[in-house]
Image (cartoon, rainbow, N blue to C red; front, side, top):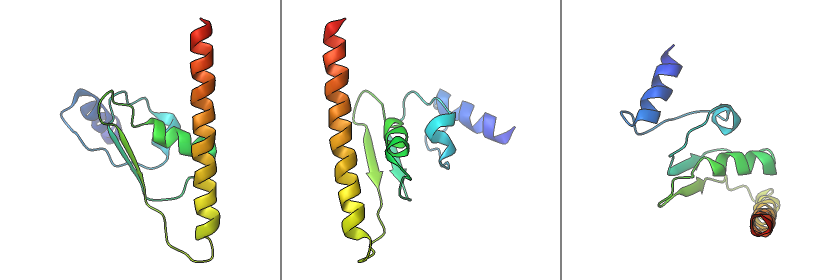
Length: 102
């Protein structure tokens, strides 16, 4: 009950900060979120896009991702996020192409 009430208060604006686990990525529709802060590495591109997509306010939406600095994994992690950014750009281009077709 507490979770449902908190989400309702967030949606109506009486609560303006929601701290949640990855369940928010797919499980909840939160239409006017303007900031997502992620403290753990997404498991895959889909998870990355789901969490980044939560910040979809029309004005000043932002996505912040904290990365652990580990000399052994940092080059791989950076490459992975660069790949995610490239995939996201391709997705936008595809969306743009199909929106012009309609």
